[in-house]
Amino acid sequence: MSHDHSNLFPEVMPAEPEKATLEGKNKFFGLWFFLGGETVLFGSLFGTYLALKNSTAGGPSSDEIFGLGLVFLMTMLLLTSSLTSVYAMYHMRNNDYKKMVLWLGITGLLGIGFLACEVYEFAHYITEYGFSFQSSAFGSAFFALVGFHGGHVLFGVCWLITLLIRNAKRGLNLYNAPKFNTFSLYWHFIDVVWVFIFTVVYLMGKVG
Amino acid sequence: MTNETNTNLSRAEEFKRTKSKEEMQRQLISFGLMIVLTVVAFAIVATDAVDRVYVLPILFVLAIVQAGFQFYYFMHLKDKGHAMPATLIYGGVWAAFLTLAGLIVISWW
Image 1: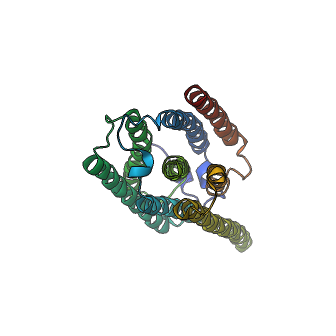
Image 2: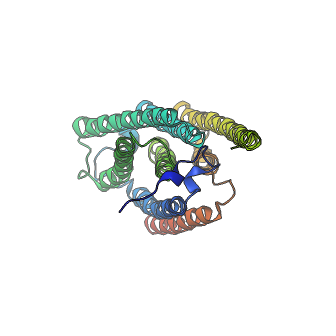
Image 3: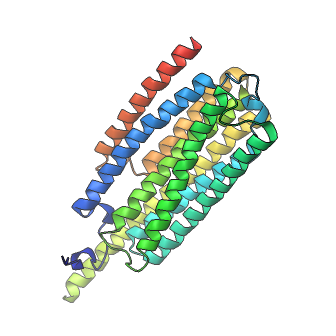
């Protein structure tokens, strides 16, 4: 079946290219619907963590193992990647495909940097402190919550790479603009979750 | 296309670009404020400067404000046509709140 895509390449992009088509509107709604569900999911994981964080079973407690330096670095990486994806969407609205790809690429690299720090962090806990998913209820709750967030970052990076490869030769149009925009919204949400992780898990864990 | 429509088109495009540039500036300011909020939160814990009783509420408020910047500025929740996304997110926040409250009450009461 052949499609006429010419109407997807307007001379200039409309004010909100991500919502100019029905498909774009649906993607926008669907992603927000999904994020509402994600809020409940992470709420449950945070609740579990708060309920179990003192059940260390004689193992290390939160203020013994957490180091603020690495967490601060991870926070800056993710926060900056949130800004770079804002820049990407800014260039999308101006119909500048190359700059959008550039900023999305930077976003992805920052995400990979964040993941590298997290892998190092987890490995450090396991090898230095013997603190793992199995060591205590605190360990299970910690690795479930923070690991689930890390899994979201990993998924986001894979999603971004797939988008960039798939659309490499297409340029920007009203068909793929919503795809880039949904990724960007998802990425911001991941940063929101991290804000609560560094606050509730790490900072409050240090205070006790 | 006549010259007149061409000019109108470019003027509309120019208007759109000015608007999105202004929005970009607001987002940059939000980013700066979020960095400040983060640094303040880490500094409070690292320096032990604030009394323990106040630390938890302060950290919590800082996180809420920062999340607000993400949602309203970076994710455009403040813009027109975002009533449905806001409903979905606040619905999620409400359910998450009930879950959190339930789990905290049964374990800490």
